[in-house]
Image (cartoon, rainbow, N blue to C red; front, side):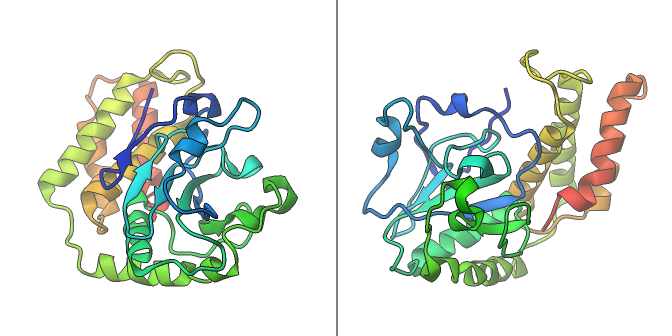
Length: 260
């Protein structure tokens, strides 16, 4: 089973996260939440009784510390019917308090690292940074994270763009490393099944991991054409038509899936 953890976060997996299931397509972006409390919500998540369980992927403290509670390839239980479309990020504090500079910096770094689109999502189905409250009744009818923090999404995007402006392009070695990882993913599966042999394999899962790994290695600048060519070159000449079809699909869609 694929898993991915942000290396800037302390991994504190909640014991029941596997029950939420896996994404069946790459997330459209991430949802900004507020805990309406001080301190880590790990205990609230971990000890929630059956029937009232909930958890997000990340939590960012007021001083910029980050905890991660679930792999990024799995869904969270944070925004009801929106769980299958977005990653979820909790922020320490209360709805009437603005995000601190430390939180804004960390959220900008997270935004760059996860490869989300530089857009403000105002309704389900839109790409970029959304809010819990945008989903209305279908997402639990929560006024979260509140108007103060919702309005700071533009600042998160501004800081994310500033981070990228200092980035450098991928080296040939980094492109090869990403292409090799992608090749290994492609060769590890057969068309129609995931590596564990139990769940229908969805091309979006592979594309999502390609995007996450490329964003991590690239530090923000990716030549998608060079990366696509490197992936294609890694596929053995004697590979089956199904493997070649997956590789071709990955290469063709990198320019749209690898949103920078």
